Length: 614
Figure 1 (tube, rainbow, N blue to C red):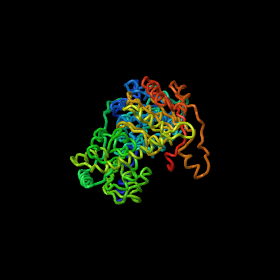
Figure 2 (cartoon, rainbow, N blue to C red):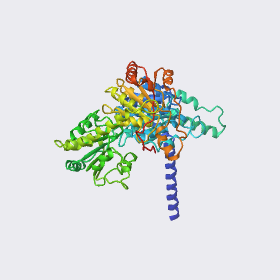
Figure 3 (cartoon, rainbow, N blue to C red):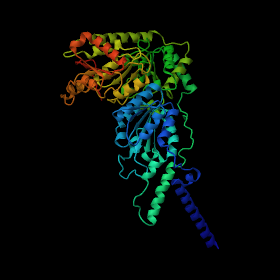
Figure 4 (cartoon, one colour):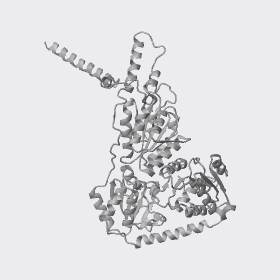
């Protein structure tokens, strides 16, 4: 009797396992879903339309691309819905342009590229966006769902490439997944610490049923049972691919989650700052992120009256000549400061890993990312108060809590006096004659003086651009674009393209140390042409005794610009007396819709001597 019970129990368990296995198999094959959701075999719709609908609902205005057959449905559908398709000549440029749009518009920048090499070409640009904390959506084509790993055209393991670079990666397996996946990706890109996200679209998830079905037929199927099983499997896969594809789905934006400082943390900071005699604020790119408008942040900083050093995208936050914007002698100021507020600024190589901070200073660190918030705090510095939260909204709340209190005026005045002394010295150095060609500092000063009030400065390059960062004065918030912490060369063309689309009425000034991409849109490209990688050569020659790989040719970049339909100018020492007139003419040409390029032959100075670029 007991044996019978045991046998029945075992059979019961076995039956459960079998049934469970069958249900799981039915689920994985989509059989259960297909029972409840039909396949519209006559529908002309395709997956690209679903992508476009979500993008439009999220306010996306531009999709940057280099076209490929894998992604054509996305591009065509976006165009039909009024989203502008901007085609580039390299996939990295498409991503750089999307990055610029994200930074300047406060929305997610979008790029779409084809499978395989199209995606591998974007890797540097995506990594740059990750380190610059730009919300960016990369849409990539892929081999069909059944052909991946079987030697299809341009088929590689794309997910493994992008998982280390992106906050979120997904591979679409059925058409019905497109809408919820794109919505989720857009939300994640903007939440917490912003960054890139990636969605892979196998080609059979984007094209209409009648075309995809043609690819699922087997010309000479095996005979017998195996042939029937194969035919059933392919038919079922096709049905599951399109089951429920065109049912109505919510395309509206999902909530974006942004970490905020607690009231208690803000109050502690208010008490700390209120007692400070020599406070300093170091503002990083994070301070410019939504949801707090940059003008509100600017007002908060002006109300606080605390001296500010601006870095990255926060350059220009306080305008051209603010009494609290300190541009020079940062190391000396940090030695004296009794309170230092790191508002989105990271203690990486840009702050000598925290070694420039005085150990006696009270340090308030605010950053959305916990890793960046505490970077190198185990070695060279310690935060008094560390807040994982949004820097911009924190500054506004701090200012409101300190209403009526201002930093002692003699402190910013003394730092400003040091600024004036240093900048007068830089001006004097700009008037010196170089052995050959034009003094680069003189060129930079001249452009800065003539620059329009609404100009956006795009910095792309080495020594010449490094010098420009010390001298150029952005006129307002969100008027400076540089690569960010990754230091990528080649961002210029894409950044300028994105900037001009976001601000069509603004003058876009693109600064190169050598032409790395052609300007396709009416911007002013200023090339500091010294026929050398001077930023490297400056230290390589005295340390290692060789200029190998640093010497270049004085290339006729101005002719390249003419070839692209723009207007190029060759500017040498003989043109020094009319330098201002040439710049004004270039500005006029640009306002009339023509891209211009100044190929400025520059000589050597010792302005940035000691700046080792490693």
